[in-house]
Length: 223
Image (tube, rainbow, N blue to C red; front, side, top):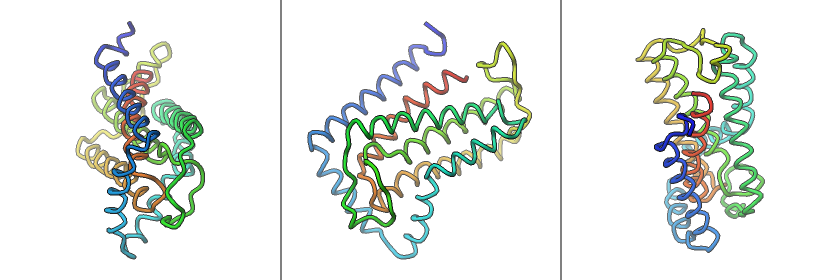
């Protein structure tokens, strides 16, 4: 067995997929309707004009242009092309492939358009914004940690042709600050999708659960 896919990692992946499968089964059999309705009601009770003005544009930031632009910039800059650009681009594209395949497999309708605070088309399950945000920005956190720990050493995937990182966060304090901001972004992106009414709570929960498996796989591939 490849040491990258060791027993611990395989268990994490298996548990992630298993829990996602259970949530999916509960969703398909209508057993999550009470949970979704209760959580949705709570989030709708929080709606305020000032909060909506913040969370609607914030939720829009999870659309494809932001990660696309970031990946394009990282790929365009020679110092970040191999160290960040390729890992982040592959990770984002993998997320899109996973959630699009699942959306068209289950074809779950979104909450009624009357509760939407923004325009959102397509199927609901799972939440693409939540999955991509979790996996992409967690991958970035892991890359920051790898380069900090290994002083910019090349990722293992480039062992035949080492590509050391020339640009990375060398200060542990700055790295922790950036990591905290990214974690907050991940959490609030998922919650904002419920608040703006375009996703059921179980859509977000399932995305976070499945995201663990995707993160583990991406980490094994690149690190």
